[in-house]
Length: 499
Figure (cartoon, rainbow, N blue to C red):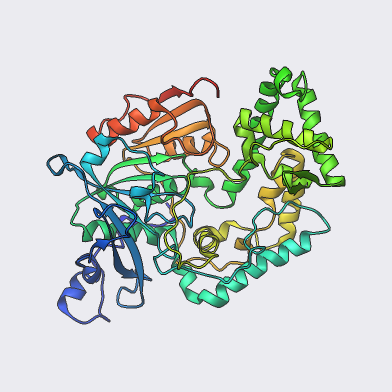
């Protein structure tokens, strides 16, 4: 394990030697001032039910110095609808890192059955540095927030400068605070929430990056983890730079599947009668757009901008419709666009507050990711150049996007090493077969790391996030959350007809 002993793993709530702190109670439990807080609940806003309440907690910025600086954690609660059936609390996280989760209990992002909402208080929270939880900001411009940077030899120096600028601006504006915006500290914050709410254990539903956060909690606080559902899992061993490269690796098979599906429907889309013809049509469009951008519904698409829609190819029908419309536009005609595909699919994230800095989600995402995994990112820009060239050849659809330089190359390490996830906590992992953002290999890696887990794979399932898209998988999650019963063995569900 990266972080040594069990005592270290439980450092958030293990009594420590605190000679520098005054008072017998502080010496006995340095976190008592946080765990014994009484939340001041009040209605979150006028547009949601009065039963949806919010509060703000204080937690240590640095858990190794509980008497030092504090930071805010905004939490929300929607009480179980049946007090007699109430089991406990169900914490929710939408992903990211950088995703606000305060509104999750009422936003409709997470689709829960009545059986679940009768038994659990749904608890939303904005992780430290996010949304209403003392939001981090680096003063980034819109261009500096743009992650989509394909490799080109003539623009690589600008990409290096962009990555360095983001890291420098964050460091200049937020200083030493960045070291403590980590997944491990967010997991500790979750345990403060548990203690404040008077619970011995927490149950949890996390999406995307939220699966990694949940897994870290199970590693740090295994005896306090009750029922954990991890939807679209990040492979813990590849968390960091490996996440980006895993997306490029999966984009190739997804694109091949799309060419096969589309070729069988040539009479509908007219993109080619064979997979090879469909592939040629696509790359001809990319080459044409590189020479002269294609005007599609008022948006000019370069070849790189077309490739940037790589996630869309996990949804074969949507991708075929879009490429057919793009081809019509390239021929000088004016199609009625059905809508430009999203670049990074995922659950619709709630907006925590209009007072949150405009760059908060981007700034907090880099802060957490880079602090967690800084040592896994090469320092030499030329390494990124070599990797981008190599990966573009291996994965022509998007290899260079994922391997190009990122701000983590110039970040300072976080306050402690990353967590190695390896435990026997029981958890349920949900995974779509054709998830472009957290590919199945990540879910399988999480399954191996959590030895007590079961995995539900949606064969033919398309897109990022399973919740609410497959009745078979949803039923497994409901049964687990309400009864504690995991499937007897790993389960394969089938995607709805038409995918």
